[in-house]
Image 1 (cartoon, helix red, strand yellow):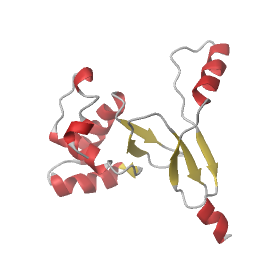
Image 2 (tube, rainbow, N blue to C red; image 1 turned 180 degrees about the horizontal axis):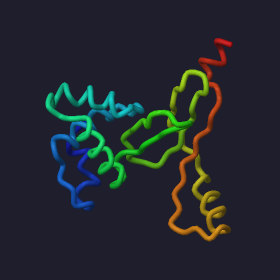
Image 3 (cartoon, rainbow, N blue to C red; image 1 turned 90 degrees about the vertical axis):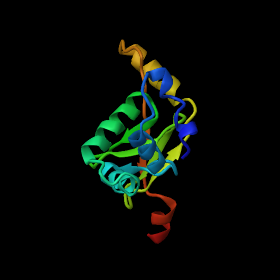
Image 4 (cartoon, rainbow, N blue to C red; image 1 turned 135 degrees about the horizontal axis):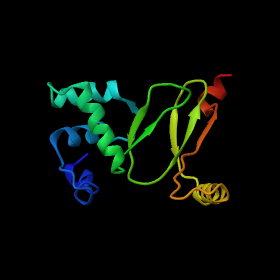
Length: 139
């Protein structure tokens, strides 16, 4: 991932595009969902002295400004992904494959439910859990 494409959300959030932030975004650049340990291993190829703590702090900052999304399910380790547009997830209950999907209308349903309960400034994340086509075919 090129720094120019990852720089989009940083200036308005008043964050500098540091080499650690670029490296983390580059590690997440192919759209995969990675745990912090895997991101750390990938970033260490580029920045050998980077600590796991720096990776977590960087992920937290990138999450706050909307460039990274964290995903966790059933107490498992959080997985992170670069997010440049809102999407939801399909999670295979057998192989744990995580697939990004667009789900038009979900935001409106969530807003209506939240409004009935008196909530404001709502965001939602839909996760549909089932067996993927590959696991279903295997039986």
